[in-house]
Length: 278
Image 1 (cartoon, one colour):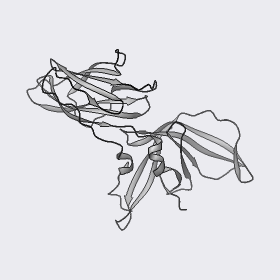
Image 2 (spheres, rainbow, N blue to C red):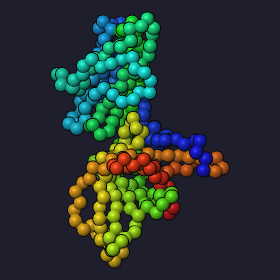
Image 3 (cartoon, rainbow, N blue to C red):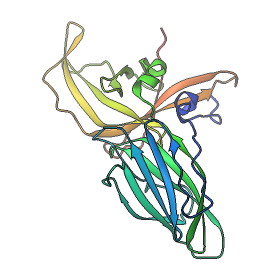
Image 4 (cartoon, one colour):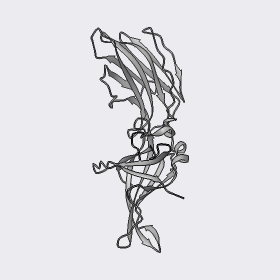
């Protein structure tokens, strides 16, 4: 298969990342709210320091807004001064300042993420310009909305077969709107078999379904059926699943596969699964 046209995530996952314009201020004190799904935010400038405030009606104790500290791909010209999620009536308040003091205009992006510490459900981007040690304006930005398991299940549910192996991957919708994954090789030794389970959630920065509860189960095979010997305590295996699309040898048709990478033991292998033939 041709590999030059690989699309990680593809339009199926990326279609959920809808852009929303972020307020661009030309003064130091002007404030405006931009409506999003159940949230609103404003920006304020004071002596070159930019403050962002988020209001939200959501009541999810597991998720919170915070500044993104990961790799943004370019040199950073902005740093966080202070942030809090405990101000009255606010889900988040954070202040940022420029760290370049040259007489040269630079561009940077401030990213705020909505996360539970394991994965990023949504994010807000603020594109800013800096000069002379100050953030001078917010010139635009965007918003990535949440993608739930129910959004992805119609495309991913079912049985997939390992491309270069004998394992199968079965995907179903989880009770908490994630996706349940079961990986098995269907073989048995000494009348026993093992399979691996995990629950994945879509991370809009990774553009993949991430998990942190990978669990290995041991089951006894009886009359061609597998019965779990005992209730297995939930594991802490980590990794991700990404949807991949590659053109066929003729370059005319996209072939979809699921890429699996398990990081639990420092593994760097990537396994590919194709949709099982009916």
